[in-house]
Length: 248
Image 1 (cartoon, rainbow, N blue to C red):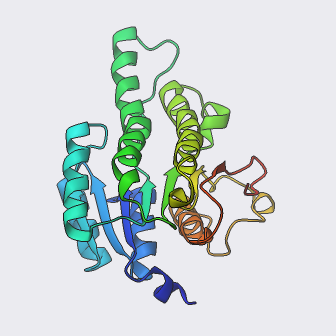
Image 2 (cartoon, one colour; image 1 turned 90 degrees about the vertical axis):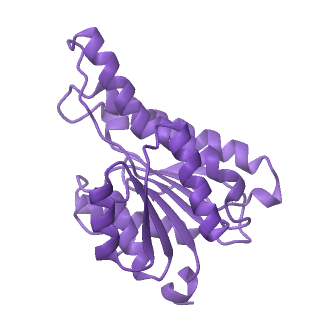
């Protein structure tokens, strides 16, 4: 079956969809005729992305670290589509917290970073889990190599901890959703980390469409994960990219 026919009528929700990896994911899904809702905090960025990506992409301004914003966004998505096939949690940023950051500043930046990267993914996943297609729904969490390394240059305590937490959230979601039995065959809840820094020899199992750019590579990986689980396949399992680049 072709990509277009497979993805037609699928409903995809992408947080952080106005820029970066989220926008690249939105473009990739829009290319194969999915209906795409992008979420983000900045109206101008979202509006520009939706206009450029085409009529299948629409936007909702929302801060995913806020429960009321998530509830409002989910209500709008369900009112328009009635269900969701794929959730991509790509929202996130790093404020930069080091061990010598003043405590009040460190707490403020920690809360902001963890809110966007981890709490937002948690709120979106829990809010949309009851509305994911069964069987065949997918949750894709965009992570980072910082979850393993602590950051490339230090001063990333907030970001590294948030992304490591995202791996735990992925596994926890997998256990909770798979425990529901056959109706919980919602594909795979994936945790994906940055692939642009890998040497080509370390990416043998990435999909051929994975570009060497971070946004292009991770959008291709998200597309691959979203298509990989067959509706009749095994129950949800948590997985993430192994250090050598192979996929679990």
